[in-house]
Length: 395
Image 1 (cartoon, rainbow, N blue to C red):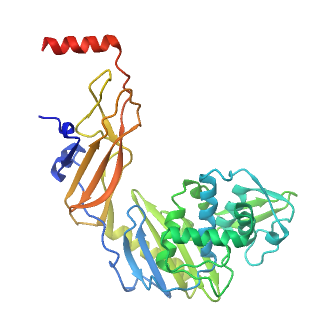
Image 2: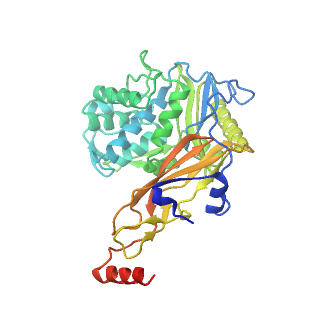
Image 3: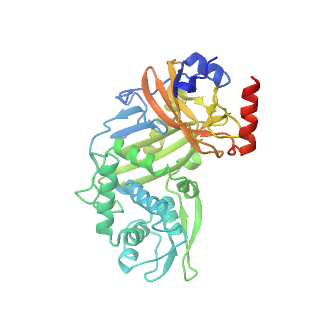
């Protein structure tokens, strides 16, 4: 068979993909955001809600999802996002000692009772925000990252704009009541999904109870405000919020196998109802939707990539990451792949990006993934080239 990479690009049909990936064929696809538009018994005492698949971003349930309302301490999702962004960008390390100002230590509401003038590891401040919603820690990290809470809030709003959160405005980093602060269920879900792309978040989000140690030896017991990490199978993170104005709010996530959902419920009338509503929404998602793998990062592509100047003329390639198709259980869709060979020169290193794979669902581009080398191939020596010429001559 003629090597399809001679044309630099080829398309595999869904049936060919079935053979290429060990019999795994796609099923289901991303569904529209209008999947559910009424409570249908899934919500209890909540004003709005939104549930989305984490990997694809597709909505599976929505109710009053764009209604602007206060979200209380759920706004700390954005506070934490800026913290982890700063770590990712190298502007601060998790083990850096952060000095606490009198302004930070004097914050009211939920707090960890930081000592003014003392220094705490940045990671411990983040932990206290995630676990027990510490307002004083929020202001301490805001002042360290942006110089002042006011500038930090401006940075929060810039990040919201970057994420396309059109119904969100922040006025502080704590969520304490302020007339000019609001968000909506859809925006909360999107910002929480963006937060949990930082794997370090999960180092803290599953803690149930732990002592926070102050510099003078004093300790404060932290208890996680997200009860679902103990009561719902698969829940491994979340952020609660409550004020009289906002009611009881929650942004949370649950993962089972390859499927992860992000859920937000706002304006609930009781704390129990926010957790019950989120549990029902998760149950609905896990019962009715699935992620099927169509590209496996451990399985090589059917065809090898051409290699110029290598010890061998071609090499094995794998997807850089797994690719899943999300959709309702039982739905079938046509899946095709367009693979591009960058025609790199030797040497090539295992894991090196050497091309790309475009995944199409029902003819629409669904995802683009890097193709990487599955092996190391050295540059051909002079003796190798002589040998190759001799072998070609003998043919």
